Length: 92
Image 1: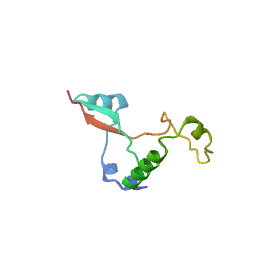
Image 2: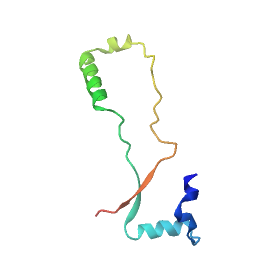
Image 3: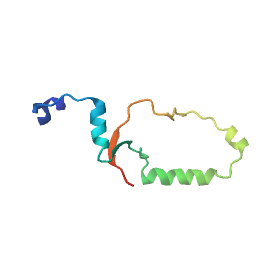
Image 4: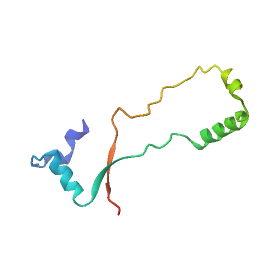
Protein backbone atom coordinates (compact mmCIF):
# COMPACT_ATOMS: atom_id res chain seq x y z
CA UNK A 1 0.00 0.00 0.00
CA UNK A 2 1.54 3.32 -1.07
CA UNK A 3 -0.11 5.23 1.79
CA UNK A 4 2.04 3.38 4.33
CA UNK A 5 5.23 4.75 2.80
CA UNK A 6 3.95 8.34 2.78
CA UNK A 7 6.18 10.79 4.69
CA UNK A 8 2.99 12.24 6.20
CA UNK A 9 2.57 9.06 8.26
CA UNK A 10 5.76 9.87 10.17
CA UNK A 11 4.35 13.15 11.47
CA UNK A 12 2.66 13.40 14.84
CA UNK A 13 -0.99 14.37 14.33
CA UNK A 14 -3.55 15.70 16.75
CA UNK A 15 -6.92 13.99 16.93
CA UNK A 16 -9.65 16.32 15.68
CA UNK A 17 -13.26 15.77 14.73
CA UNK A 18 -14.55 15.82 11.17
CA UNK A 19 -16.74 18.83 11.98
CA UNK A 20 -13.69 20.79 13.21
CA UNK A 21 -11.78 20.09 9.99
CA UNK A 22 -14.80 21.04 7.86
CA UNK A 23 -15.27 24.25 9.83
CA UNK A 24 -11.61 25.23 9.47
CA UNK A 25 -11.72 24.61 5.71
CA UNK A 26 -14.92 26.61 5.28
CA UNK A 27 -13.63 29.60 7.27
CA UNK A 28 -11.34 30.89 4.47
CA UNK A 29 -14.03 30.19 1.86
CA UNK A 30 -13.25 26.59 0.86
CA UNK A 31 -16.29 24.49 0.00
CA UNK A 32 -16.71 20.89 -1.11
CA UNK A 33 -17.59 20.16 -4.72
CA UNK A 34 -18.01 17.02 -6.78
CA UNK A 35 -16.01 17.18 -10.01
CA UNK A 36 -17.96 17.11 -13.25
CA UNK A 37 -17.65 13.95 -15.29
CA UNK A 38 -16.23 14.45 -18.72
CA UNK A 39 -17.50 12.46 -21.69
CA UNK A 40 -15.17 9.75 -22.91
CA UNK A 41 -15.71 10.49 -26.58
CA UNK A 42 -12.86 11.04 -28.98
CA UNK A 43 -13.20 13.29 -32.01
CA UNK A 44 -13.55 10.19 -34.22
CA UNK A 45 -16.44 8.88 -32.08
CA UNK A 46 -18.22 12.22 -32.33
CA UNK A 47 -17.73 12.34 -36.10
CA UNK A 48 -19.07 8.80 -36.57
CA UNK A 49 -22.06 9.44 -34.31
CA UNK A 50 -22.93 12.64 -36.17
CA UNK A 51 -22.71 10.83 -39.52
CA UNK A 52 -24.99 8.06 -38.22
CA UNK A 53 -27.49 10.61 -36.86
CA UNK A 54 -27.52 12.52 -40.15
CA UNK A 55 -28.15 9.26 -42.03
CA UNK A 56 -31.15 8.39 -39.82
CA UNK A 57 -32.60 11.81 -38.95
CA UNK A 58 -35.53 11.38 -41.35
CA UNK A 59 -36.71 8.08 -39.83
CA UNK A 60 -40.27 7.94 -38.51
CA UNK A 61 -41.51 6.33 -35.32
CA UNK A 62 -42.57 3.34 -37.39
CA UNK A 63 -39.02 2.97 -38.77
CA UNK A 64 -37.57 2.95 -35.24
CA UNK A 65 -40.10 0.34 -34.09
CA UNK A 66 -38.57 -2.09 -36.61
CA UNK A 67 -35.11 -1.87 -35.01
CA UNK A 68 -34.01 -4.81 -32.89
CA UNK A 69 -32.03 -3.26 -30.03
CA UNK A 70 -29.55 -5.98 -29.05
CA UNK A 71 -26.87 -3.89 -27.38
CA UNK A 72 -28.90 -1.96 -24.82
CA UNK A 73 -26.90 -0.70 -21.86
CA UNK A 74 -27.79 0.16 -18.30
CA UNK A 75 -27.15 3.79 -17.37
CA UNK A 76 -26.96 5.07 -13.82
CA UNK A 77 -28.80 8.40 -13.62
CA UNK A 78 -28.19 8.98 -9.92
CA UNK A 79 -24.72 8.06 -8.69
CA UNK A 80 -24.95 5.56 -5.86
CA UNK A 81 -21.28 4.63 -5.88
CA UNK A 82 -18.34 6.62 -4.63
CA UNK A 83 -17.59 10.03 -6.06
CA UNK A 84 -14.50 12.16 -5.89
CA UNK A 85 -14.81 15.49 -4.13
CA UNK A 86 -12.71 18.55 -4.68
CA UNK A 87 -12.15 21.70 -2.64
CA UNK A 88 -12.73 25.01 -4.36
CA UNK A 89 -12.39 28.57 -3.15
CA UNK A 90 -15.63 30.46 -2.87
CA UNK A 91 -16.07 33.04 -5.62
CA UNK A 92 -18.39 35.93 -4.82
